[in-house]
Length: 375
Ligand code: CO8
Image 1 (cartoon, helix red, strand yellow):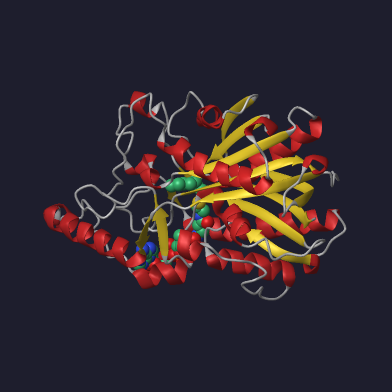
Image 2: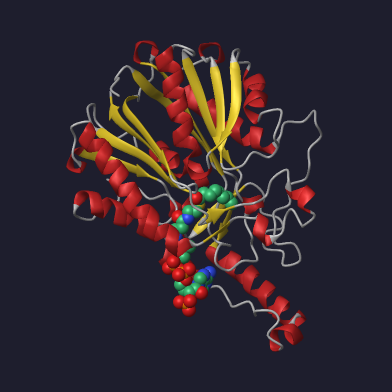
C-alpha cells in the first residue's frame, strides 16, 4: 500500500495527576507479603501455600526500566488491606472515568490538528479494556464533543492504538470519514494485581489521542504523511486477562488473580522482540527504506530492554535517546498508548522529510506499525 495523502495532523496526551514510585509500590507490596506470610504461616509451613517473597525497586528498574507510573486514582493502591485503586462508581448521568480521560486527550489532539468537532466524522476509542460494554465510551465522548457521525470502541490490548489508527487511515482512504479522532484511554490500574510480585509494577494510566485526515484538509503546524500501515497477530496465551462478562457465570471470583492481568514475561520478551524487529524491517524494506533512513523510533513502551534489543537488531548498533525516546521510566507500560506518548512528547523537532516508525507490540500477540514522514 502506498498513499501519502493521508496524515496524522494532531496528537493529545492526558497524564493523570498522581504518580506512584517503585519505592512506594514495593513498600506496600512487601508489607502486604509480610502480613500474608504471617497470617498463613501454618499453611506455608505445611507446604500448602507458597510464601510471598519480597519485591525490590532495584529489580524493577533493572528488569524493566520503570521508575514510576501515573495513576488515575492513587488512594487504595498502597493500602495493604485493599491493594486496588479507589474509583467510586459514578451515576449514569455523570461522565464515565474513561470518557473523562479520553476527552482531555481528545481536546488536545483537536487543538493540535486545528480541527473543530464539525470537521470530524468518526470517533474510535481503542484500548486494552473499556470500563463497560455499552453504550460505547466513544459515543459518550462523541456526544460530549458535539461530533456528528459515528463512534465505536475496539479492543486489541497493546496494539489497540495502532490498530485504531489503521482503521482511521482506512476510513479516510475509503471516503467513509473526512477525519477520524482516535482516542486511547488506558485505565489499566484496576486490572493490575498489586499482590503479585511479578507484575505489580508494570502498568500505569494515561490517555492519548490523534486526528487522522486527508492532507488536503490539514492545516496543522506539525503533520505526518502515513506512508504505510502494517499489522500482524499470532495467538499466544503468554499475556492474558480472563476477566469478562462470563466471569459471573463461571461462579468464581471475577476479580481473582486468574482474571487479572498475568503473563509469562520471559517468553514474551524472547518471542516478541524478533517478531517486532522482523515486522518493522520487512515493512521498511517493502517501502524501499532501510532502518538507517529512520530518524525517530516511537516504539511500544513495555520494557526498556525490549526496545533496546529491537532497535539494535534493526540498526546493528544502539540507538540514542533522541532516536528512540523512552517514556516508560516515568509512565511505565501504558498498554497501547506507550508509542503514542513517545510520539506526543518527541516529534516537533523533526524536519520536513524525516522518517519515523510508530510501532506497538504485545498481547495477542499483536504488532501494529505506521511509517510516518514529517511534512
Ligand atoms: N522484585 C524482585 N525480584 C523479582 C521481582 C520483583 N518484583 N519479580 C521477579 N523477581 C525475580 C524472579 O523471581 C526471578 O528470580 P529467580 O531467578 O530466582 O527465579 C528473577 O527476579 C528474574 O525474574 P524474571 O525472569 O521474571 O525477570 P525478567 O528479567 O524476565 O523481567 C519482566 C521480568 C520485567 C516482566 C520482563 O520479563 C518483561 O518485561 N518482559 C516483557 C513483558 C511484556 O512486554 N509484556 C507486555 C505486557 S503488556 C501487554 O501486552 C498489554 C496487555 C494489556 C494491558 C493490561 C493492563 C493491566
